Image (cartoon, rainbow, N blue to C red; front, side, top):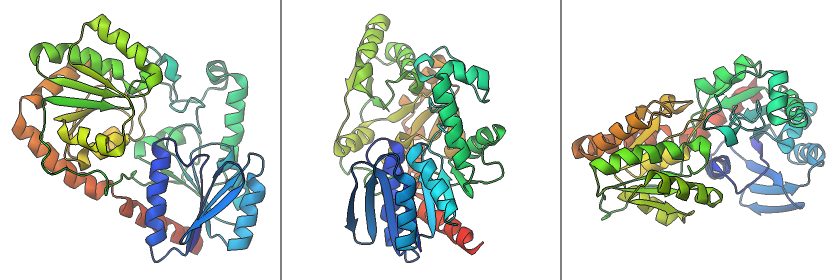
Length: 381
């Protein structure tokens, strides 16, 4: 079996991390003869064993995909994320009679701002779940809305859509996108990299990662910390996120007169893993329609429980190792944080159960098997 994966980038966010993990698993599977990966860039090609990495320019996607299908006898084209390189690849695949799969890592196919909410007004902008032509064109701009609509029409040619949860599927289908064609494949995490570090001691600290952005709920965590730090003056909050939002975070910390808050920049994997392992728990305070937060899986694999907002796909992928709270409710979050800090037995139980759950649920091999079963079904059908 030969599969072509398509995505605009190779090194960017969580979707790209998962694509690399999936490629690593697919290339080792006996059912896979070759894996091809196409991305944007100056035209180039390199190979690693049975994996071929290709780059092409915008406007050339359809032609390149058709050539790859003809030359290598591609069996399945799988598009990750939502941009021109992927949508045109789907059109090319169907023109050649090859099954096409759309893997939705976010809601960009519905909204150009990715999350069905303008992220720069996320603090006071209510989430919207329905596509409304007049409302959407005002929010994101006429051109962006109609460009998104055209790409979505291309993706309607896909045979199957893959989403992280039933919640995601419900939102896509209520907007009439790929109705009746969806499957749930739970996202996967790097189980080889994220694991407990022997000899590392837990500290009276918790961490939040990649959440300086408004829709990630950094402000919720800081308002909760104003309560937690008064009750537990020795506790430390470690926060890591996009440096472009660092000044706003500093201003908020000063306004709330917070203590024991460390603002961290992007870290190497080894330091990130150690931060997880040293923390009592990880906080994921998202206020947007979360699809999947990599940090939850990484934290659980390191043996660190998670306190997360009850929103989006999170409830469906938090069967163990999690404590949930209502989105935006900083007072409830503070209560959950204090409770876990003061209950080592509960934290230890959540850590053990969470790691076992993550190894089973978020393992990339499990995801690879599910994708291969889907390919077999498409090719055989």
